[in-house]
Image (cartoon, rainbow, N blue to C red; front, side, top):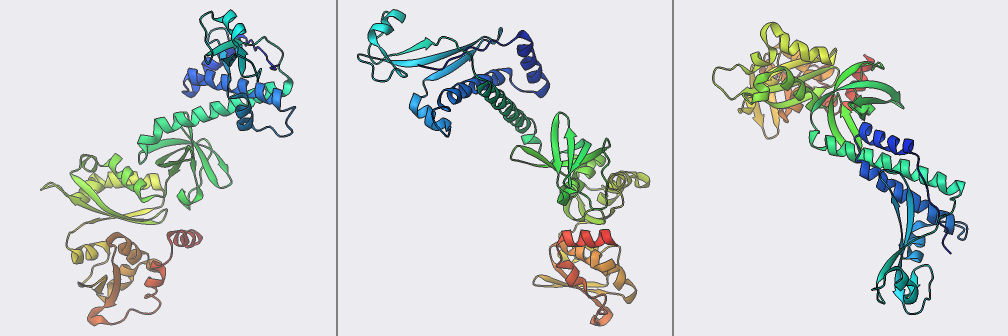
Length: 387
């Protein structure tokens, strides 16, 4: 005999489901379906969990032929449990089959092989089953919330949002974007920034992984999006950012080009009295930004990339550019700890060797550029933050 129960939800509970669905952006019908699934799972566990030492829902479904289903009235919250049984001449399994003579009392035109639905008489569900139903319902609601997040943000990856800082959780910044929770791992944070609870920060929606929103302030794309917000010429496509090299929190280089005659790409990014680039730098704190002009001629592009240093000549052989600098420009071209030339490497995607006038070797202490250039960005950021 089936273990059966009927659950009558109060109007307050139905109202609560309506409220949760509205506040969380969840389809109300999905919540009711989750409740039906939860109750059905609890019924199976209560009935068969006492018989089987270990409850496995897939095995129980196989025993029952998955013939049980539940219905919850959307207005009153009244719960009904039904069993779908196959009409047979002689019953061998009372849980999944019904005799033709009994079935004809329910539906006079029924035939052998048909299925009939029988409402099961009610009984009280035990405390354990009730708790199970609640837990499964909450789980379904969480899953629906995750689906709602994916639906809302999946086509907005790469956009900049203003996020409210909530808390730090094992080094991860937990933020709020609208009604959704976003996470900023340590590697996506600017190393020398301190995130204060209750403050708002612009972040790049970097990706959605396992239904979690991941945001970043360290990604080079974040810098591009900030310039798009400040420079209408970039947003319209008149000015294009061709390349970005960034060591978040310390220094960045961006290469820009104009697609319209008479438009100065660098001037557009800087703005009158430097207001545009100042707004971007204010958002990034202490990070310095070099704006250089992109050139399809690689030699000129390499020379531009080493700005603010001035170079005498650039010669490219294979994947290496040899740059000759005046002696008073060598330190500037290399930069502190090789940062300037390292960023130029990243920007131009070509190895750069710097030599003095006449090809003389740079002093060993300055020629540690290659060592620094081969370091990972994380190692560079860590060293910079210590300094």
